[in-house]
Length: 327
View 1 (tube, one colour):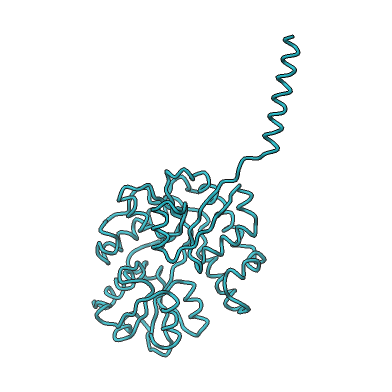
View 2 (cartoon, helix red, strand yellow):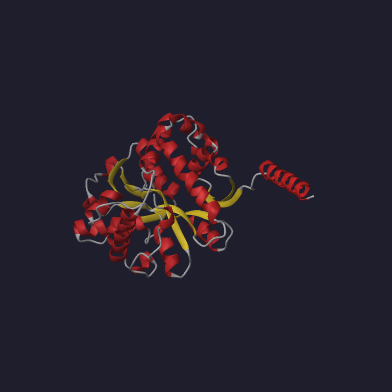
């Protein structure tokens, strides 16, 4: 009787094991908030083309946000699990007591483009000129430019030049149509300006170096709550993100697969320039040195732009960069 019972029990275990193998664990579900025209969409398109979402057991629900602020609100409200944001905002959230943290996504930053006909050979030549600026007076890149201008000339850029703030497409239009002599814009729009005959006077990394920073930190990253119940899905997404970045660095054929997402049409020159510019900013890993660079950057912004530029907080909050993702 005991032998028959053991055999029956063994058959039951075999059936249960076979059933578990036949029905794999449910995919990890992730809600990702991204802007419709952001360059991060290129990585997502590449991730899906490579099947890295599926190989990491991920089901990604893309939710479009109007702009960075809308994405931040969606993350705070729990409507999305991950967004693309800057580390200064993440630091402010941690200072306010939240568990928001960040894994770097890109090193790419913009620079100051000028019209060759405007006679601008250095920062001092910006005096009396019209400058289009992406963002607002407390935008981090503008604070860096204004600080570098003051260091070079002793003047105040906001007093010495006519500033026109706006969204990146408008800033690019003002420069390329001759309504502005110079433009401080995002890197991908500066690529378009360069193809239209404009030239880069100085990059943000060069300005940071002039202000005493030896390294440019990764300004943008994947932001999320480290105490989120979706952390397994978030971790899988981050792993898939780094795997996708590695492929984008070397695989030209992959870029052809995601060309439609780049909105370049049949413009081969623009396609190649955007591809190469994106590759230049790819983050392949991060660690304490990047945190140190971000800490130094935060201090410069607070000093040169005033506490308004950093939300009233003088120092980078501990945990801004997720140590659990160091690699």
